[in-house]
Image: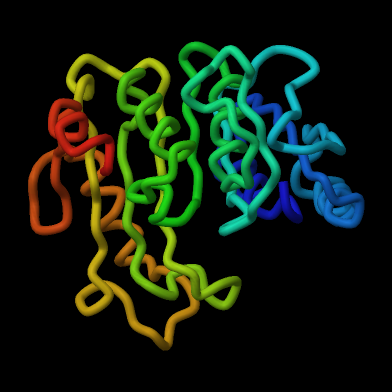
Length: 231
C-alpha cells in the first residue's frame, strides 16, 4: 500500500464511484503513514498488516490490484512437494511471488497493474520461467510497458516495466499481448523525475489503440512459446 498516495489519486479521480480499497503491507510504520493519509484522502481504505506474498483479502475478492513491487527483493521459497519440476528450495524473486498471490486473490474478471523489473520477462531461472509460462498459457497478459531508464526517479534508478494483467480479456485481445516501449531519447528527459504528461498521454493512446506503431508491437502467444517463454 505504501503511503496510500496512489490510492488517494484513484479516489480523487473517480469521485462518483463507490470504490472500496484494501491496502496490505508488512511494515507497521508504512501502514501508520497510510492510515494518516487515508483519514482525509481515502476514507474507505481498509488496511491489513501482512506479507503480500501470502496475504489474502478477508472479504470479497477485489476486482483490481495495483502494486509497486519491492524491486529486486529476494526471499526463501519452496514449491509444493508434488510439483516434481520445481520442488527444490531456493531464493526467489519476491516480486514474482507477490504477483502470483495477487492473481490468485482477485476475482475471475480481475485486473492487475504491477511495476517490476525487466528481468521478470527474460530471466531464465526455473521459477521465473514457470511464472511466465503460467501468464502466457492462462493468457493473462494484456500489455507490458517498458519505461525509460530513470522514469521512477528519485525513488529508484532501476529499469522498470509496468505489467498489466487481465484474467478475462476481451476477444480482440486473446492469445496475444501488447508491448509498449517508450524511448528515452524521444519521450523522456533525464532532468525530469517522472514521466511528463505528454509521455503519459502517449502511453494511454498506444494502450487504447492496441496496434503496431513506432512505440507498440503485438506479440502472439505462439511466438512466446517458440521463444521458450522469454518475452
